[in-house]
Image 1 (spheres, one colour):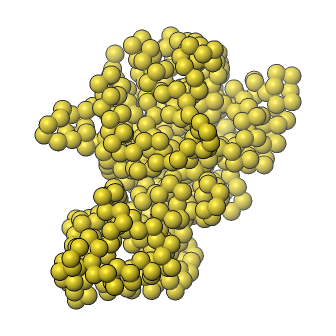
Image 2 (cartoon, one colour; image 1 turned 45 degrees about the vertical axis):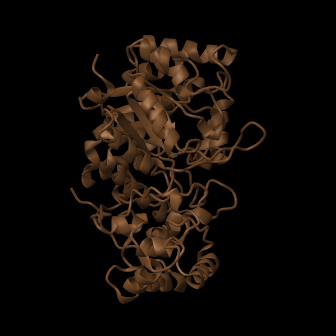
Image 3 (cartoon, helix red, strand yellow; image 1 turned 60 degrees about the horizontal axis):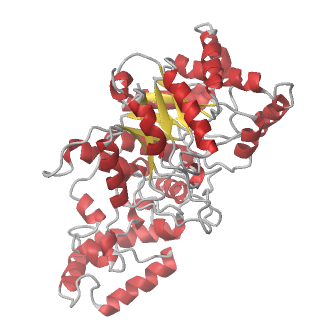
Length: 510
């Protein structure tokens, strides 16, 4: 049988189904139910692959390989979710070698949800890598990690979430999507959402930006009234259900069948929209029994070829003031691909930080050469002269809440510290978990990548927001002087300066 990677390059419209793992062993009653569902999905000729989650929602669950092995050995393609929240880079590499050795060649690389539970309380998050740097690592393994190891054959998937409210949330998601594809992502799944205009805009962006070489898979979640309440309450990071959609779901949930017929038809309409928009396939989530999968697919087959256009007008649950890169994707608005937008004020601290950094850390500048000479002649070149080190600690702590990581990303993120101001230490773009611009984790406020975008937009450099990616932080430098490391070429910024990236157009044209 052709592999998933091969089929993604065909003209077939493919169907994947998400299988959510369980907490417990394979012999538990809940595991038996999941295995029964998996067996039914394996037998279905309409299901092309089965995707298995990795500690979904930040909860501890059975490893996806335990559920995936019987499916794989039965001849069905399996996509294993690989996330960064629970494993550091060494453990992720180890997991990747194991996946390759056992025949799992389809991987969905994600940053992952912030942990919410664990034995004895909430688990400590890892986030040593993120989705961008994980994709880069898997791609390196595909090309030959080094001379001593064989090449892997991973078909690497990635996720994008453009169901966002603010411009500073949407555009960084698109820039990060481009970076993921550039670094080796072979297919893209969009986040769960309920607005056909956003789904159309994503497809337009893929086509117009040149990123369309990576097949796009549409995410179809089979709603229930209970799931709608969870989404509307913000209990699941990155998924939005508007008050209008929640009211509809609640009303349907009170019907004689609990809304089962309605929700299946609603999912079938979403599937038809993705097919009509030219997506390469659909990804069904919220599935608890094989009958639901079969019924959704049967309903979708009853639709006429152009019915999806009417469905797109129906599945239109955006929010007031929601940003669209291409306003014409909403009916009744005039086409305007490259349009002027408000340039937010950046503030004195951003301007001052840029000025001092340009003066002190730009290669070839007098102060840069002086700094390199001073630290190179210090007793400890990783700390530099003690008075200078104390000045660095004090100023960066006061101005940026610095955590003294030694491999500084302040210039990458418009002089906002990812260690102290981002719950997931995201150095390669925003995760998909923001809600109305706010971090998914309480206490962190507005997403630093939203704030960074607005600062960069102020000086017209927003297109270069992710030119530095991928950043892989060197933990060996922790507790050392980031100034010394930059001046002596030890940090990621100094090394990246040798091969600057080309900025992406924010408003690509056909």
